[in-house]
Length: 183
Ligand SMILES: [Zn+2]
Image 1 (cartoon, helix red, strand yellow):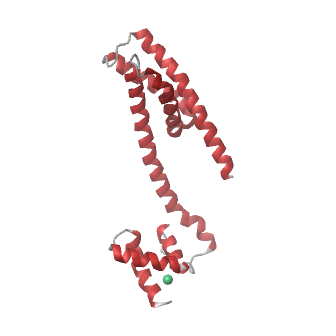
Image 2 (cartoon, rainbow, N blue to C red):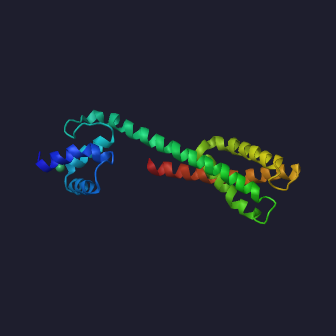
Image 3 (tube, rainbow, N blue to C red):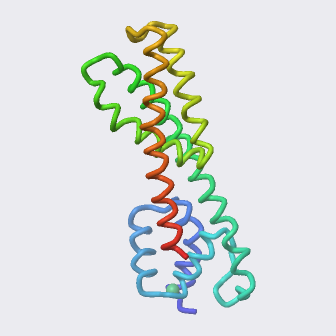
């Protein structure tokens, strides 16, 4: 192993944690670009296993992928929360616009609500999103955030649900198409 390699490998754990200076990071990065062995070492470090490429057994591959999957899951969960928050926000926005001159924008917002809904709930969005609509609609109605009578408030929930179904259908078809492409 070259001196440069052993130096870089000593730095890699710190480099992964982003705990080196900008100059050092630059140095490590330029070495990694030229040295595939150190790059492999970095990859295995990132996957949470401190094994070198030579020590790594071929059967260990699936084991190595586990920490990576955990990170992906954690990231996914964050995206779920963001999508969920966006979902609630858009429904509130939509109902806020009901009865106003922005009402027509709901024909775009509600399908987006459906897409987020599918992302968060998958097929269960079909009933969970309308339930959310109903809850938020009731809230908006009870606190008189918009000027609607009970009948039209309920009617809008039904109409918005139809737009939401369109969004869910679009999201489902996209999801299905992407999955096919991956396989
Ligand atoms: Zn190297």
